[in-house]
Image (cartoon, helix red, strand yellow):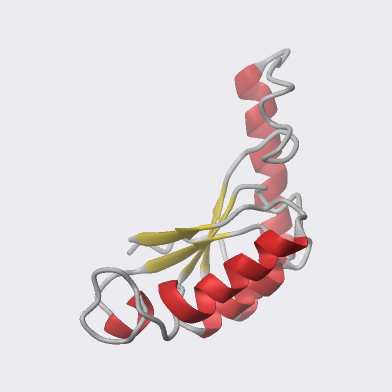
Length: 141
């Protein structure tokens, strides 16, 4: 598994850089370090590819050029269209837990009940995935 890590902050510059990286290096055409041809990892095959994003537009673009999986740190609590992108394009989705945003998650680390709060968050994430059309059976690579 190769995961193209992105940041889910709102900075427009970071979104543009992430989009360019998807198009040229990680998934599409480009000159990826370690490749022998002028191709991204998706063109070489053999390795399942994941996109680390909480944005539906970025996920759609990555799946269009070869990603098989979406790794969403927001657990579908960010972009409501992300579950629909995964379902429509038959990609797997990894639902993670985060409190706040990448910029603020280290500022509020107190939980009344750590495991209960995380479980509740992930149960909500699973429901958002189901409502968005994602199937519940696992898709292992």
